[in-house]
Image (cartoon, rainbow, N blue to C red):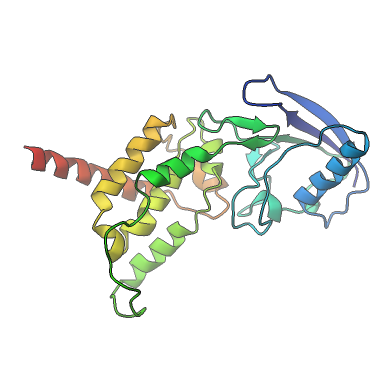
Length: 252
C-alpha cells in the first residue's frame, strides 16, 4: 500500500503546530497502524530528522496510551478497538490519512501526537479508590453480590482511561470516564461505604480541571474502544444528586 499521511507536528505545548505531509510506500495491509508509524519514523531518522512522537505501550488494547485522532475519529475508523489493534487493511491503497492528537484543553500537547492525560489520573486520586478497611482477602463467594451488579461493575471496570470520550465530545466532557470509575466501585459492597463522598469529590475535581459538561449526544459511547455505556452517566448523576441532598440534610 502507498499512502499519504498528514500528521500534526508540534514541538511542545507552547509552540505553534502544523500538519506535515509524508509519503509511505509498500506498507503491508497486515501491518498494524503503529507499525506503519514505526516504518515512517525509520525513514525520517534515516534522513537525519526528528521522528514523530506518539504514545504507545502494550500494543494489546489494554493500556489506552495509543490515543490518536485518525481521519476525524478517536482511535480510527474501526469499531471497539484502540489504535494499536487497528490494521492497515482498514484503509485503501493511495488514500490520505490525517493523524492528530487529542483536542481538549485538559489534555495539553507534550510533543507531536503525545498529550498529557494526567488530568484523568488526578480525578482518580480525588476519590477513585476504596480506603476503608474491608478486612483480608475473602473467599470469592463469601460476599453475596447480585449478578446484575457484578456484571455492571465489571463492564464499567473495563474502561482503560484512554480519553477517547473526552476527545470526541464537543465540550471535552469526561463524564463517561468518571462515571465508569464511580460505577465500578459504587456497585460493589466494598465501594458503597464511600460512595457519596467519592462521587462528589471526583465530579468536583473533573469540573476544577476544566472538563466540559455532558452534551448528551452519545458520541462518547459511540467512540469508546471498550464500549462503556452512557447508562453509567445516568447512574452517576443519580448518586451525585443523592449525595448532595444527603449532605444538605446533614448540614440542616
